[in-house]
Length: 491
Image (cartoon, rainbow, N blue to C red; front, side, top):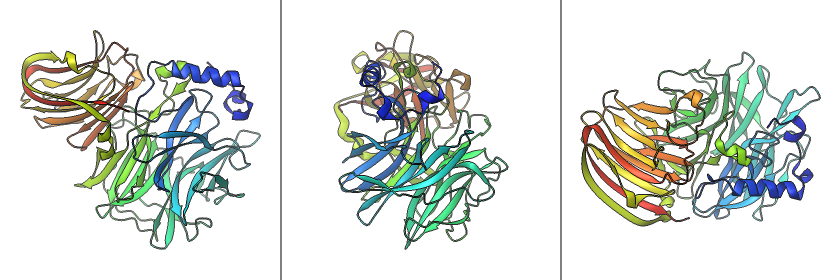
């Protein structure tokens, strides 16, 4: 379907009851609706926004175009949870209904101050010639979830030297001051992030660019996020326009981070190490973090990518969010573990251990669409050894050690209906060990694989048939021992 500008920028109030019913029915009838991941009831979901703990609950918003699987007139849709596991959908929370966000309520963040949840976002507007004019905007939500927008933007234009690609404010507090980092593009079409400061969350002053060693690293840095862990500064951002380098940067757009010394908020200077991707898989972008009441740093990402088509499009919806991941820093690397709260979904545990010698074992009694699965694989001195999930007669999603190429590889070549095959059907990381521990979360149309207690993560959407529900263990031209645990997930 080709969407016209008028279709992409309709207001929700202009949609008939019959069209809403058609959208809802089409999505509900999709065979790849997720079970325990946040997903839109209709239309397209993208960036997580405004992630905060407020008034006894986690509040998480996401970018939402409700009328189809395309990027049209964006709203913020609101979800909340008491435990990071069971989420309640509250529907649209921020509407594109002012002169400063007339063409979309774009991404941003939240912070709690004086018993209110302060929301910051980019208001997208277009003039008569379709030129973009971005505004950084502010709204406040009270304990009854009533939201009031400021009458004027808090930042009315990009500073001199930067283009209209100026968006995605992330706000935090340090000492008595507040700070904001905003994704930006220089006039020479290179990406960066800008640092602002405020004493009251309303009046903001530009400090400078965040000064990094990456003066020419993509054409735009989206969704920046700064926080500190284990006495290190961490700058997360999603650079657009990075060329592939071997196994790195193979997705359409990337998401990653820099670790280093704490950010100098007086000058914007950030002494850091090499940029690393956050996820080694296919479908991960625009993550955002928050801090829990007990001091943990939790991250959620968009399980999808811009400008990529997915099989769910024909059911008029697209995308979901990742599971919440707890972050730490070890040896200058961000470690990602599934949030501990997810364990409450576990039910009906099964365990087994065995040795395979150039053999494939199918566990017929372990089949399913939605489960958590932990597998330790040891003694892989040659050949390949690994596991396959959502396996059927002609379908499977494989993760395996490849000793010949010294790689750990996720392969969705035969995962079902194809996705973005132009960007390849495998993803790999260098891997020299002869053993690996895989913690795998399988949902109706996704896998999230945590390697060696979160040292690496692979995320992918997959679209197998309903009949493909098996789990296989394999050793090819190899001998390997397996210890496995599986839980059904009851949501």
